[in-house]
Length: 269
Image (cartoon, rainbow, N blue to C red; front, side):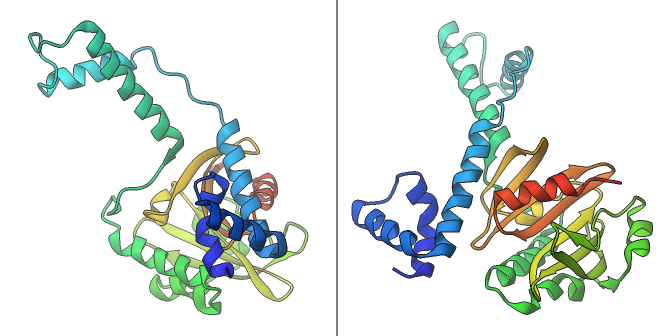
C-alpha cells in the first residue's frame, strides 16, 4: 500500500474495523512512513479529546419537553396503547440521541442559511489545500473580493483587535492578509508560512461558521479549555473555536498538539 491507499483507512484502523489483511498492510506501512504515522497519531489524539470531554448533564425538563412535543404532533395519544414503561423507554432513547448529537455528528447534505454557494467555494478551497495546491490560499480571495489589509485595517474591519499576529508558534510568519466579503460575514483571512511554505490559514469572523465544513465528519471537544469543532483533514487538522468578541477558524495545523498550542497562543492582548 502507498499513502493514498492508507490514509482513507486510518480512521477504521484506529477503531479496529479493518479486515485482518488490510490491518496488517496498514500496520506495516505506518511503521515505515512518518507522514501516515503522524496522521494516525492525530486521529488518536482527536479520539482522546472526545473521550475526555465531559458529557453535558441532561436538563431536568428535557424529557417533559420531548413528551409535550410528541403529544403536540399526535405521536403519543392518551389511548395509544403504549404502557408507561414503553413511553419512558422511547423518551430515554430520544434523550440519549440528543446527547450524542451534542458531541459527534455529521452535517446533513445541503448547508443551511442559504449559503450553498459559499459552502461550495469553501469546499473547493479545502479540496485544493488537501491536494497541496499552492493556489489554494487564493481561492477565497478571488471569489470574495479579497482586499489585502495590514493589522490595523484588519482590526478596524473586525471591530476588535486582530489576534492573527505577525509571528505565531515561534516560527510561523503571516505572509498575506485579506479582508473577505463573504455571504455570511466580513472575514479576515491570514496566511501563515514556515520555512518558505504555507503552513496553515487562519480566519477571524464574528459568528461560528461550522457549516463551512459542510458534510465533513466533525467532533465537538474541549481543547485547552476551549470548546472546539475539530475536523480531520487528509493532511493536518482544521478547527473553529470562540475568542473574545468572535470566532477563529484554522485550516492545516499539523496535529491536535499544534492546534492546542495555537488555541493557547491566540488570545486577545
